[in-house]
Length: 481
Image (cartoon, rainbow, N blue to C red; front, side, top):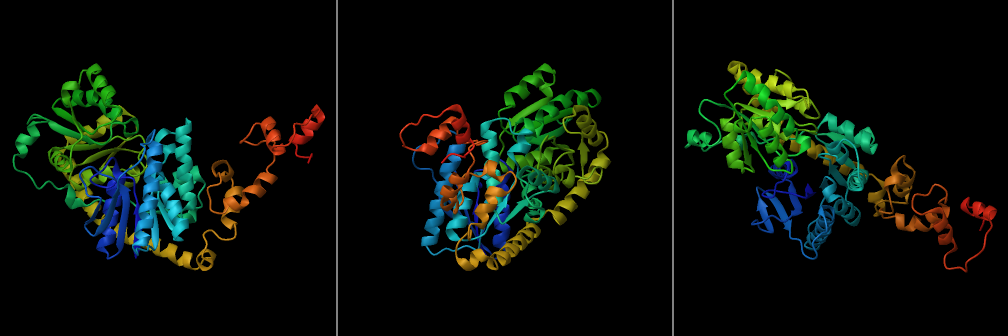
């Protein structure tokens, strides 16, 4: 099968878990002898075109005016993705399925779906609604609309946990038969440190020989719950004085976290390591006695799998997909989200009971290798592709050579509950329906124009006419010609 992957990030350009997910999935599909092309953003120092472990990676440089903000820059990247897709088509590349990852590739996914007449599959890794516990400004609402649009255009929507399935069905009103749950995976071998030379000296950079290491790695943002971890430090030290908290990662909350650690008087027990590369990460896992994932919002929590694969007992927040990955006292421990005392109690359970920590470590490694390996996940993803292709080939769209056909999808877009508020002439057939839609649209209750300006719009360029109040009321109700 030939798959076209669309991803905003891809190694070595990695901001969050999305890029690693796409890379691992693409390579696992290639290992199963499928042809995979990835369209992604440029990465400094990486070639524009290369084959990485069987995957054809196309990194797109951004030419032209820079975007005024992040969203506009993403839109520019999508235009470049569309251009690159057309180049591949001209070179003779054809694809069976287009696979878009998150709203960051919604424009290109939709355009290539309709332009190439191939079914679109989308993976939603997280939602703007979930990250922010609601939508509070125009930017968040815009991103949420793009997420909805991508899920609407997709033939199937993949998410990583039962928690995420419930979230996207609630937010986007997706039918249950359109969603498939496939967990994230991890390459366990990648998290085993092969460089143990000078490990003792390396550990001393972060902690004294007598100190136990509690390790966090991730973005320093509110949703990751690092502030809860900082608040938990005094509770841990009160009962276990020889502990060092190593926090790796960057983010906008770093200054506030440092300031809070000083206020609590525990800054000497916290080491902010900043961004670390993969080798340093693995060596830190090798030093760690406990790994902590204190997220407030986490669709899956791939970092928990990484720690488990590295053989480090984990404490996670009992929230989102983390609750499905970590089973309390079986392969890890779960703390109440946002609760510093609960987090401290669970960290102490490992620090004060090394034998229990060793038991958890062995259980976790076994489960990661059996359940969360990428070969299994690639097979599950292929099943989704195959089901989509079977349905697509039997559909009127494939037979008629147009996508969508007969205005059916466009009509659905305008009548489905909640769709009219989000959908604004972005479909292929919307252009043919625009005139009729404008003629039939009632002026009262319109969210596009002010009623008085709508009356002027309906008159077009005609001479101004005088109306009394009664006639104006009738005009607003649509009863006058």
